[in-house]
Image 1 (cartoon, one colour):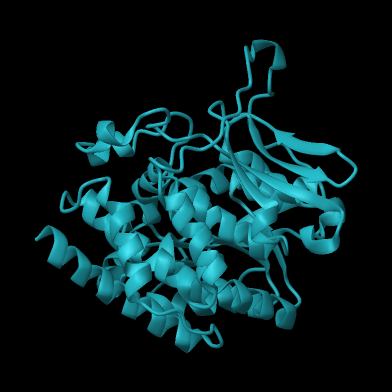
Image 2: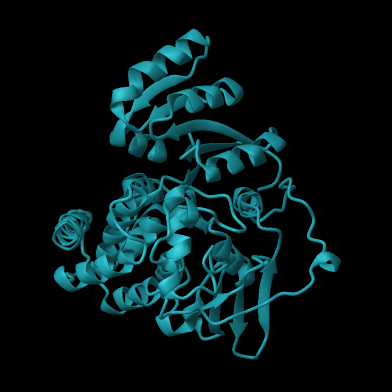
Length: 397
């Protein structure tokens, strides 16, 4: 985007780490971007504070029980910002006239509806909600095709791949690309064996060595499920085959991903581990703007290491590849079972190593069906959640 009309940005998930980074970039470029819609789950105080600073036209609290409190806070602050709540408000905001760009950063399956709505409406969709692609990759691509919008991934790895593929038109299946190399930090337990992980606590699992993230995605990083979900995401975002996508452990998190071409060239995107880089790229693409990120000092990098992932210890990665191979609603089952199992682990009701066991059992118990409609997907998601709860009750209660 060249300088001209100010881009109106809806941030769905404004109080999370992605939202905070996005608002930091937007604040650095008031002549280019405006936060016109801010949405949060149930953090009324945080959302109201952001509204005081950024003065959006609309503030949405996902939990309707908190709408009155949000409206009162906005009124007390003397803001013109309108308050709304619930899934319908999120969907209408993502597809309506208050924004031309949507940052989809609502965690988990809860972000699917608004993400699809933004795609159908032809918005520039900046995607941090990987579950929307994992669950509904074909449906999302159909919605983008129908709406004529653009999708730019915000995951550091997929944003790196986007930058390494030509012309902003990712198509790894075109024949020019040999491999997509997704880098993984390895999480907080890299190098540990299974016996060392039996008594892991939620706080230990959430202590990521490089990135500041929410608790759910931090656990996914610790189990390598985050990377498994990213493999499925890459398949749809870049029209890639599963056998083209390889995971490489890179503990420094400096090389964010690589693309290997058939002529032997390997292109990589490097940078300090800061989400503002991907956000600035996606907001301004095809331009480049200052992200507020410190320059990468190559002379201070002692080494860059690359390792094969330990699939025997971190079994979730292979479960994701298996779900991708099965196809249909299997990735939705994988995602649903993972969300339920991780929530139980964070609540202290499930051991860390049991997360993979529960997901594997759910994939075996829930038959995969063709993915044809959103209704079929929602049914598959609910079925997988119920079955996962039953599996945990039988095995761990």
